[in-house]
Image (cartoon, rainbow, N blue to C red; front, side, top):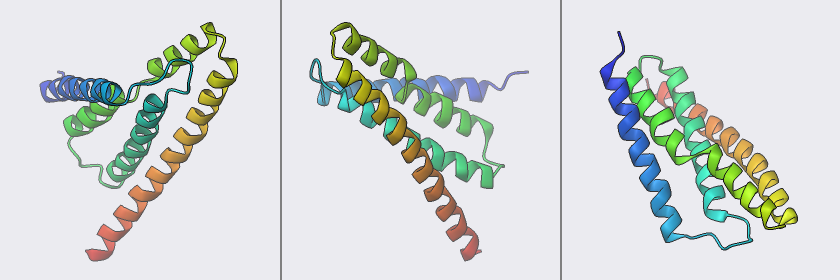
Length: 134
């Protein structure tokens, strides 16, 4: 039987993540024909946070499933979307901005992986400090 709390947490997290992404896009609009810095920043920040949280959850597997589902696939899944990356690349390519979309794709891969590594390391440091206090 499905856990209704997980469904509700993913829905609420998804709504919050989508609205947060949309709001940041309004506050920091991307210029046409340029690297979409807001989308890049959102995806990099989300990669860091998701990696840090996942590392904490691995160390503490008793974290409620609905909490993990709401924050991971819900909030951060809606906040960081692959479709926004693909849409931006498609728009830049259609406009003939080939150097720009190539730079954006490269930055997305490098910074996203770097942020995930830094998030993992941050999560490990947090786990290690917590365990040292015990």
